[in-house]
Length: 395
Image (cartoon, rainbow, N blue to C red; front, side, top):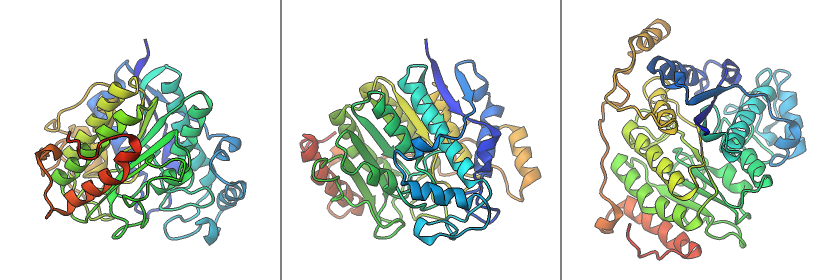
């Protein structure tokens, strides 16, 4: 009998650190793991905490160009700038041992995927992963190596015929999409703030994959200020039909939580409970369509105290089949750690002050005056015919 969840973790994951002023602080991982421990979630016998080694260079080169790996290794030696490779920039400053830190993060995602594909674990989680902007030959958007793409390549080589990548980050999952643009056996799904108003400027409904893979890139581009109700309506209006049509052998999902209203790097207003519900949906779809094979990754999220630990605790709880209610108080020892470390009031509960999220399903009817509904319809009309789905079908 496999364990419920392989959870990739060791203190070395905190070495992926762009410096004290960078938005992607490793503190978000530290606070999440401390919260999981205090709640007893990762202490259960049906979870395996697993450290990982840096992935081998030949595996990185399944998706990354050799000259780029060389550049990352140079950046690991100290102050180094290569703007063509996106290194030494404001978004991706070089730091000592950058290659080792990024390769370890990638190794953790590969190990997670192999644990699920090999049947040792029903689900797996790597909260340090989800570096979805990394390109074949360049770092981008805080992402050095594209761990999800490497893991997909690995399970393909082991026999996976159809892999689905689901990206819930506020920013378009451009790197993973680019790497599998012409591969009809990999479907990438991304729900994000429209590239017309947010980095990386891509991910429109008509971006559907290469000529031989049309319909295997699915993008929902939402307007700024989309709230929890609109976000969940869009997710439910597209994702379940796509999963059921594609019938993946394995689902890899990225749970960047920067769509929250407290996050400074997007203009969406999606609360903690909506993001919890999204993880529940992905979990349900994995059991329905992919024999339960599900790997969950972290990603973006820059409200380090008030959002990231809460959302990611829910993800691990769901993946380990021990979901925790949002009204659960956060442990006093965890709150005390934040009080000691930061001048910041700690969250009191596993939900936020915005409460439970509700939404009106797509089957209630299309509202032509709604920007969200127009975005949903654009995606359904673009990709559903390529997947053999009737675009007029209501969930």
